[in-house]
Figure 1 (cartoon, rainbow, N blue to C red):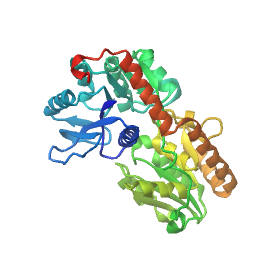
Figure 2: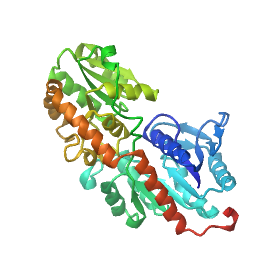
Figure 3: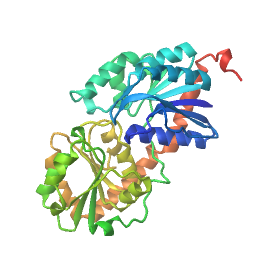
Length: 382
């Protein structure tokens, strides 16, 4: 199958990881993939058998949104005309191109699928005010023009349906993890950090991630000298938080870790993974930690609570997250048998529901379903 994938390759965020993992898995299964993403025009595209890379020019690009140049629409249209894919899959990048893509694909008679990543607060779909709510309100009228919209949980599906997207066009395909790569294993990270017990946060240091409440809870819990909290990531709040929460409290700031094998080594050596977010979609960082067999504590936002339900982890309430963590952190420190058990249950949950292999199989079935409903134009027939 020929697939035109429109997504992000940088800067690092969940969308980047999603696009990388899914396209690599599709290539491994013998599909032809063209990866269209925002990059400087002078950059050298990667090309090898079954894979083609196309650069879309942009003015500004961040972890949250992208502003393309006026030329980007023309480049995208011409590229799709030349590629002649069987299906176009857009991992939505919060850019103006997301809104014109249905019109382009209709003109070229190409079936179009979207993955909608935008996080939300949780059950009851009471979205946090600001960009998340705006994004849902902004996108819903345009998503009705996509042949299918992929979301990560049933809660998110119900939310999208209430906003006007046809329920039969919304597919729930959760994020998935490569369980061979992300798995329990040996690690030297504890000895490197001189830690007896290692707690990890991995993600953006931004307001919606609620990292400051984790740091305050850690400081107030007065953890033992052998316990360390490792903060992996970067973001707008890092410079304002790091000076007040440092090594004197057992807190270590690693910054952004680009090397995947190093991130896996950190997860394998950790005892507890903490995600105190106010909004999420379905956190890949959480799934990766679970796959590595770590005890996980996460707030009941997005689909994260659904992932940890029925004993696969500890679910935190966003309204009382600091007081809960202040109690739970010492418990996790003093009772390794508890965290070992939670880690085993976390790994089991990923094996049951959230493997990359199952994810890609569901995606292939969705592609076939859309194609059977779409007449093949003469220009694309072999």
